[in-house]
Amino acid sequence: MNQVQEGLFAVEEQMPCSPKAITVCHYVLPSTLDRMEREEAAARILSFSQQLDQWVGVSWPCLIKMMQKEYETYRSIEEAYDHNFNEPRRVRLAVMRHNILCTLTLGIYALFAAKPTAQMREIPDEKVPFSGIFMFGPQHVATGIRELIEKGMLRHVQEGEGESAFDVFCPTSALVLRIMQKQGVPAS
Image 1 (cartoon, helix red, strand yellow):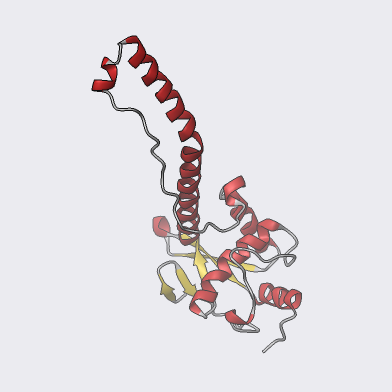
Image 2: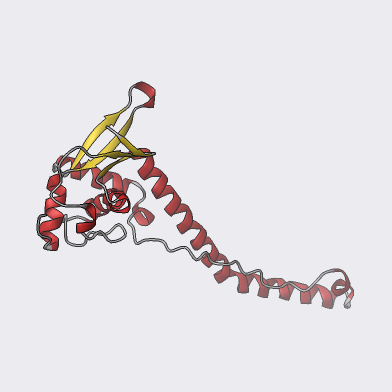
């Protein structure tokens, strides 16, 4: 297989249309492949083809890297929201403690310790796609890939040999035809 970019390989099979002819939302192919897992797995793999405007197969390490980056972004956003949600309560308790210590020490504590203030975190501007990996983990996509391979909509190729071998998942014309049929796209 010819490597197009790191982790992406050109598909040798003739496809019925160009990648830009079909619509693939951000990891969503609604009502296309009957199951959410299949739709997300196919959408993730096809998103690379749409970015390059060339049919490509995607390596498993490339998919893992993509999911890991999205999960880390999701976690950082969730942690910022959680922190900002709990911060007023933490500050309120710290202020109460500060006031009690000031009262008990007849105001001397206030000379040595500053009154607590809220430390709000900035919420990242990055948008996280709607994805099953945030609820079910990466197994969600792995299940979808396995089901697509069983149905003949993805082709599984082992690239490399020995320890350096890795899996590449290539879209097939059956997958593209199914999407075209569901979306009403004429064959080119």
